[in-house]
Structures are given as C-alpha cells and as structure tokens.
Image 1 (cartoon, rainbow, N blue to C red):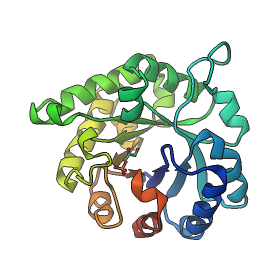
Image 2: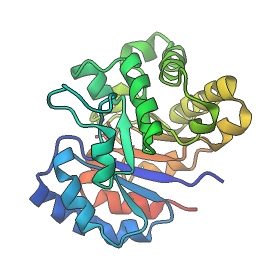
Image 3: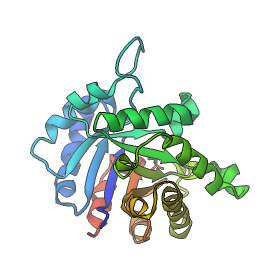
Image 4: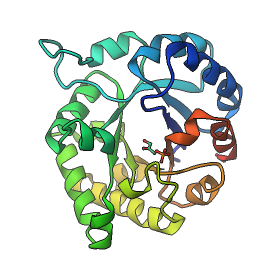
Amino acid sequence: MRKNIIAGNWKMNLTPSESKGLVNMLKDACEAAKCDVVFCVPYVDIDTVTKELEGCKNIAVGAQNLHFEDHGAYTGEVSADMLKEMGVKYVIIGHSERRQYFGETDETVNKKIKMALRKGLIPILCVGETLQMKDDGITIDHISIQIKRAFRGVDSEDVDRVIIAYEPIWAIGTGRTASAYQAEEVCAGIRAIIGDIYGDEIAENIRILYGGSMNSENCEELMAMPDIDGGLIGGASLKNDFNLIVNSVRE
Ligand code: 13P
C-alpha cells in the first residue's frame, strides 16, 4: 500500500563534476529499483544531477534544506521557488545536523514544512533523539514534541505528502545502527502519534523511513519491519552500497 522509498542524503560531499560520476555509477540500479529513489544533493549539484538523470523516471532530486520565506533579504539562503525551478521534488527538513550546527528549531522546521507543502515540494522531516535521551527513556516523548511542533497548523489533507525520517542521532555516521526492533518500535510510535493527531487513515498512509548507519548489510532486516517504509542513507549513498540497498527492496 505504501510505496517504499530510499533516499540518499549526500550531505556536504561531491562537487558538480564529482556528482556526475556518482550518478552514473548509481543510475541503472536505481532506475530498475522497485521503490522510489531520491538523491538529496548539495544545492550546487542540483543542475548537474538533474541533467544526468534526464529520462530516468524512478529517480527524483531532492535538496537538503530550504528557506521558510518566499524571497527577501536572507543572504545565503535558497527558496522553494528556486528549488522547484531547478527540478527539485523533495526537500529534507530539520535534519539533526541542521538542528545541531545551524540553529534549526522546531519552529523553523514547522515554517519550512508549510512552505514546502505550499509550493508542492515533498518534505522529508527528520526527527530523532540523542544518546542521553535514549538512555533516559524519553525517546518517544521527545519525538512526539518534535512531530507535534513540526505539524502545527498543517492541514490534514497535506499531511500524508510529508515523509518522516526517524534518525536516532547516536546512529548517524557512527556505524552504530538501531536494531531493527528498536527502529520499528520508534517508527510504530511515530505512526501512532500521527494517528492521534490526524486519525488512523492518514497514519496508515504516511511513509516513515529509518536513517542512521543504514547500509547494504542491515537494510533488509530494517526494511522488513512493518512500520519502516524505506531509508534515508548518508555515508552509504555515496558508494556502490546504495545500488545494493535499492536492489534489496521488494515491492
Ligand atoms: P549515515 O547513514 O551516514 O549514518 O547518515 C544518516 C543520515 O544522517 C541521513 O540523513
């Protein structure tokens, strides 16, 4: 019912010329995949990657951030209209690295979600707990607050266009993955939170991804979980591993 989706988050890696090489290494496998595939690339790579992907129906281009205003005096920022005109379809919002290093808050996340939806971009909303929160047993409490604030004022007819990525901060770039059962427990919890706010039907339709040291070795176990509808992949999206991950996804 929910189509799986595998999204690569390239983070701050690859110049435009370098991005060509990676796209060409990945595009055949991604085009043949039985899931939706997204490459979330640095702004400066969008043009090159879009051109390299011309004619590929199964692979979309995503950005890693956007600004919450239409336009104006916001030096260094990029608007939704700019992304749309470049052919971008998806946008990551509220990644923990932006929350940690660039002052992203639940409030700016909320504004960005609304802007993305208003402009027809598909937001990939990232939520997740720190190691301390996990140890304190407040993972779901924390994520519940992040989700409620992110969706404040979002109309129910727009909600299932949002993709939620559960990314435990302690698992990002550390090689430490949440076990499939841990990840499933939180993803099922996220679905329940959406159900509480918007009802069961919307909760059933919304796609929830896992992210955090996902690779070709652990992806099948994670993807086999009923509430995990795909992955947001960092390090492994920059190499052949990504081909193996997309190939392992069943319908
Ligand atoms: P890694 O896969 O490198 O742990 O990164 C996950 C992530 O942050 C994706 O957004």
